[in-house]
Image 1 (cartoon, one colour):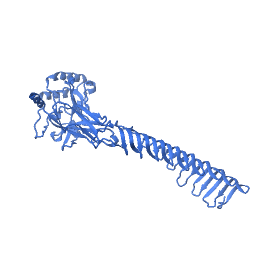
Image 2: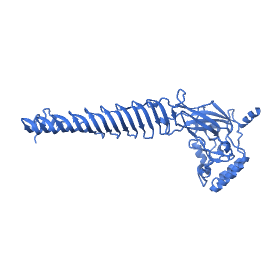
Image 3: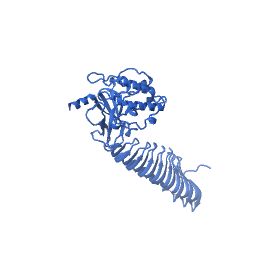
Length: 484
């Protein structure tokens, strides 16, 4: 069929007017219509083609695009199927975008308006109200990272009241502005931290900035005495952050690094321990290495002592009850590392393990570490010279030959069968009353409280807090009592 000239028509006529089915090429050659006519106007079903390849196919009424139809834009590659009004997208329809996105819902004057469902090219889903093509009003959205939000929107931003469920389990409910937490709101973080208060641009207005250990700069205690630490979370102004709770704080004790001898490890386990012993910088101008802690022993448990075992964090866990007169075996023992046939702590001593409060959750900006006790020095610490502030004196708490013998016996027997282990345990326990109790050596130590919240709250971990601890000889206590 030969190409038609501009302004020409081929089709049905009635009373010299286009009527019925026909093809018309407009004079400007940009438009071409093929379909039904009535009294000289496009009426019924037809297809309007554009020179750039775009087209509309659907219903016409009195020459206007009106009713249901399909519209394709060659320049963008988008396709719309739905209702039209005077050539505009108006009513319910489905827009399929070239990049893979899709919208199904209400349109007005060519734009998304009213209720609809939008899936973008990243797979994010929004279901709710629209205004002038933007998310506006109430709606819920699932983001590509798995977060889910339900609440108020203004011009494509979360604003008003809303609830966010994060993929990591965190939940925020409260006020929003400019797509961020703004106003009064509560977050339950996946780490267990809870903040209930005012938010400014996505951050708590009363956010904790530091850990503070209450008390004097240097804490003095008598040898063998326990200590209770009161700890606060404070903001930059020094105010307690009562709106926050749930951060996990851990207490750690250290001894000055140069106070420990620089001798080479004697076995594999000591070598591993040496590698894992990382010095901690303190604000006092020196570095410390971990020193074991344990829970203070109650009056009813005076015949028990905690076996100080260092955890991954460096805090000694009172994980095994043994006679207080028996010093900790060498680091290569089967008890420490689970080798051989040694019975597990849980099997033999399940009812005799006083766990120390190595970590505490903060409540309303405060927490308390109660009855913390510096453990007797481990075996590999006993022969180390502790230097005092005057230049150095050897500690009085040397290991006795009798204690060393008992330690050796325990090491040799630790890998025996469960029944033999239990028998030796009771034998040592009955014999301990006649032996001198071990305790921490006098001198200076460092206490540190640091945050171990995992994952960190809002991606930030608070800096640690330090205190100097001075352990005074027990004879000092006796002198005081005598003077009284």
